[in-house]
Image (cartoon, rainbow, N blue to C red):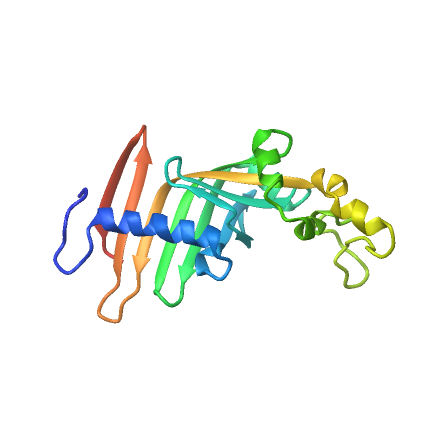
Length: 204
């Protein structure tokens, strides 16, 4: 089934348009539930999921972008297996969105530079950990350097942090939309292949 009406429900076109709006709103508003998402990668045959902040979205290219430390495990995982999945949920709307596709890590190209330019100065400290994320330590610590004295301005200037920054760009080709309702859940699926889209209502 492609675009069309079903009694008592929105059209598939309306579902898609409303989803694009939700994702754009998530990028713009840090209080929006879609500002954060679970990004799942594969480490061998074991799934690994973590929360990330959605930094950019393009419905034209079906792209989602997030940022991370280039030394983080997710970079290794994506490099060895680009298949990823995103999970969004809005508790007020009772709406779940799952997106699947392939991701690529950008570190030293125009994409990385453009994304780095969008990172606020006071957030760049997040890429200044002295040791890689996931490293074992003897006591609780952020791993961040001491910003006291004359080191702070130099670190926050970006040169120390930029080398550890990476942009993860995912192009999704599958979308599963689920609206939870007390009167019965409603679900739709979308697939893109060779420039064509197929969409259908499915049983939840």
